[in-house]
Image 1 (spheres, each protein chain N blue to C red):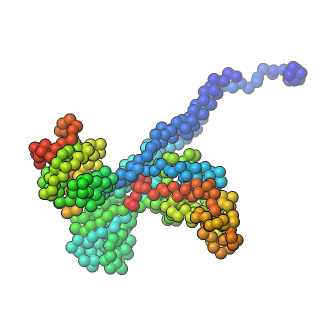
Image 2 (tube, helix red, strand yellow):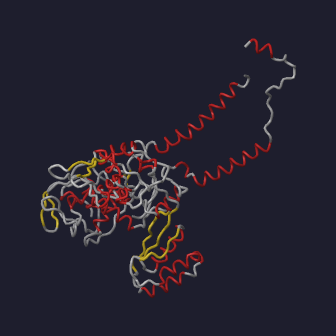
Image 3 (tube, rainbow over the protein chains, first blue to last red):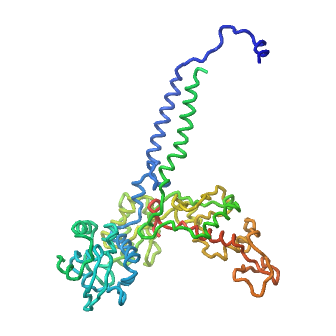
Length: 200
Length: 288
């Protein structure tokens, strides 16, 4: 090392030094313009990091517009799906019930009723003891199967059973369920008489 | 080095920025992904794969299937299809006249020819698709017009793109499809077809196994190598094995012999059968 140093020419006194100097204006302007364009592109195509937005969709709003739904039809499909996975096991996919297990829903005066207040209490609170359905006495107990369902799912399934298999009662909305849920007493399976004491 | 600290800072920021973009942001975005509910249904997606399918993924990996096969279907667009389901009080002829009367609407101008052609030779069978458009507003407008005159229609959402047209999938692959893949076998070369939806396209395990043993026996002129090491050609014992492949012609083993898949081959087939990216999801909507 020391030999090499010796062979170096002596410092001449005007060695170039690292200095600071302003970047050329055009670089700054080009960078800013590119940043701006990039920002525009990001805003239009990124979906703002929403994990559900994939190309070709460019925003959550556009994705939402393309969700296949058409009002009543979609709610009915949802109601049917919930019914078949939650209620249909006992009440049957045809709503005819199961002898010794669950009363029928098709043609039942509890389901196909003018109001849905009493009906809504059954999945929300559960039912215990004797109940008369279609002129026949059933003595069985049902757990509060609907208590854990979201409002819109419960509304969809109640609408479904009230409008299927020949039943022709009015639909139930999720706001109705919300109101009924808010008015519930302590969780305890109800009896037929308690239900009858409620307004229809 | 006078500028040592600045250099360190610049390097730190550069590496830090790419770490944020490539590691942190995806982790924040998709790190919490879990099973979800399919659109308009109660089933969860994706289902936890069976043990055989989980082991099969490792066989898939060991045999470098991802070198020639991808597991990602692409989608380049989405369209709304208006399909008639009921004509109400109309006869097909009246309905054609009604649709023609819609042609004066300026917003339908660019679709007029397509709609006209779709009902020209139509004799009234339902459901009947009459309009396919990527413009949701036009589709909604059309559906509203039809509803207003008592005609029943459905709006179907369909994914489009070359992969969908090839029948490789119904929708694009999304992160949820890979929830249980460890590691994810995306692949990048398509010497063979995409496999993201193979479990739906080829539900028959026997056919998959035959294809693995002798690709030519299932797909003529297949360029896929035969994976014979996953099978055992052996003398038929006291009775033929129930697992033996049903091979004929030049692919058949010599008389008195049978081709039996090893457990690895069975796992691989179970894995391929588990590849079903066919559920409509919020992030990849379509009308099934």
